[in-house]
Length: 115
Image (cartoon, rainbow, N blue to C red; front, side):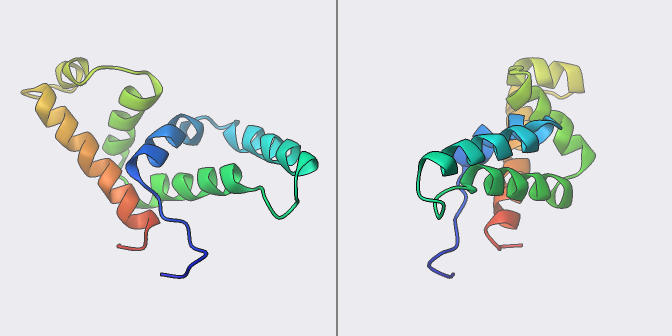
């Protein structure tokens, strides 16, 4: 791995999921980065925008539509695993959590070059 390459972790990906789902997020992230750059060294910046773009790419290339539904329910709408399991017709909240874990892991593998 190159020294300047960013490594994504679960907490970072989860925190960016609401921005990935929101179509206006790239515009907002770009504006936020412009504000940061205008007040600091221009070499610092684009972190949020780059991260949103990276995670968005993983969203579309590493996941199936069903994974999107689980992640949106959990990380955008804040629905519990119990409620997701009931809505999806699963046997338990544990099964819903396992599906979510696999989806996040697939995104991390994609983002960190393991796929």
